[in-house]
Structures are given as structure tokens and as C-alpha cells.
View (cartoon, rainbow, N blue to C red):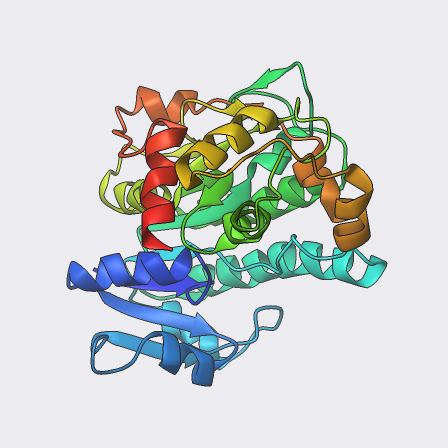
Amino acid sequence: MKIAITGATGFVGSRLVERLNQEKHQIVVLTRNPDKAKKVFPASAFSKVELVQYSPKQSGDWQKAIDGCDAVINLAGEPISERWTPQHKQEILESRKIGTQKIVEAIKQAEVKPQVLISGSAIGYYGTSETATFDENSSPGNDFLAEVCREWEAEAEQVKEAGVRLVIVRVGIVLGNGGALAKMIGPFKMFAGGPIGTGRQWFSWIHREDLVTLIITALNQTNMVGVYNATAPNPVRMAQFCQILGEVMNRPSWLPVPEFVLELLLGDGAKVVLEGQQVLPKQTQKLGFQYQYPELKSALKEVIASV
């Protein structure tokens, strides 16, 4: 297939491109920074990867690169794991809302339209709760991230007007060599690891390989339509997550990280880790999706072994 991808140089996107490259697909990487993309995808190893410079929030010639593609995978968006200044919150929203709007615009303009748009979203859609359980049919929350996800998904929905199949993947906390886990491993290495905040908040996670496999499944299975939670079937509370991480690293996990430390680092962004939500992948399991890492311990063992 010929597949256009945004967010390709990121933590998830770069592994996705590696896997698709191994499968001999032709990949069009839409990137704001071609120099960075060249380093991530050197021509010697990625001869079938074409780099196209684009401005995610602006219409332009880059949109022609979508014409003739079999699929589009939209993973771009400003990181949420930074301090949420008013300006950064606006960037978080616009990078997803307007970025997706411009991708859909390009699909609608294409003479030969892609068969499918796979568009990222997040489990932040559901809001946070210590007691509720959420699945793909649950109502949206009413905090900032829920609003971002609602607007993000609403833009992706417009692609249906062009007769294109749409798959929305609501992603949990992704575990792999990098990402959120990289920030948590540091204190454990220094024998200073432990639960963040109360420890009672839910931690809905997925191993990066399973997330990438789910995206590739969405490319190939034409019966996949609508929303799928990209989380493992066994979420845990933060205290249990840290206990298992300590076991796997052979380090203690009793030293709690106070909430104010995280709030100093991330501001409002700390809510993602401090409040959490229990999200179950009902539609994903109904599909018959086989997780390589359904249990946290095996997922963390693989990650720690590769660090």
C-alpha cells in the first residue's frame, strides 16, 4: 500500500514506519522538519519512504501528496506532557483540531482518495475518575483534554462525507523505550521510585508494539470502523503499576512522589497522571485483537530489557 503518515517521527509513529517499511509498503511521511525526518529514517534503511514537508495548520501544495494514497494515518499533535501554559493549551488543541481538518481537506480534494483514515485520539476523551469504568460507548468528560479529544474526533468524522472509512484510535499511556515511562524510570534507577500522588488513580496503558499492531490491523481489516480504545485489557492503579515496575527493575517502590512536585513540573498537565481513568478496550477485544502484552509485568519486562 501507499500510506501517508503524520506524526511519523514521534514515539509511536517512528516504530509504525519501521514496521510498515519491513512490510514493504510505500510511505509518505508528512513532516514539519525534513532534516529531523532524514535522521530518523535514513535513506539507506528506508528507501521506500518519501518525505514531504508540510504545515499542519495550513492548506498548501503538500496536500497533493495525499492524492493516490491507499491510506492516511494521522498521529500528529503537540505533546501534552509539558507545562500547560495558556499558549501551550492552545497549541495542544489547534495542532490536533486544525491539523486533522487540513488532512481531511486534502482527502476530500484528492482525485484518487484513500480507502481509510486512521486518526489518533486519546482516552482523555472520557475525563478522569477513580471509580468509573469507561469503554468506547461511554460519554465524553468535561475537562480540557476531553474537549480537545471531542473537537479532534469531530474533525476526523468529516472524512465520512468523502465516503472514506474512518477508524479513531483512543490511545492510553504508551509503554516503550521512551515516552512517559522514560520519565518514570529515572527515580527508580536512583532507588527513589514510588507511587505518584495518591496511588489510587487508574493507569490505563498499552505496549507500543500492541498499539502499532492495532493501527496496522485497522489498515488491513475493512470491517474496522469507528472508535477503538488502544489500551491493554488489564488497567491497574498507580500504586500497583509502581510496585510492578519496582519488581521488574529490582528496585524499591515505596517513596511516593508528592503531587506538588509533578504540578511544579507540568502545571495542569499533571492531571493526566494524578487523576487517571479506568478504560477497557471492549470494541478492540470484540474485534478479536490478540495482545502481545495483555499483562503489565510482561510489558514492563520487555521495555526494561530494551532500555
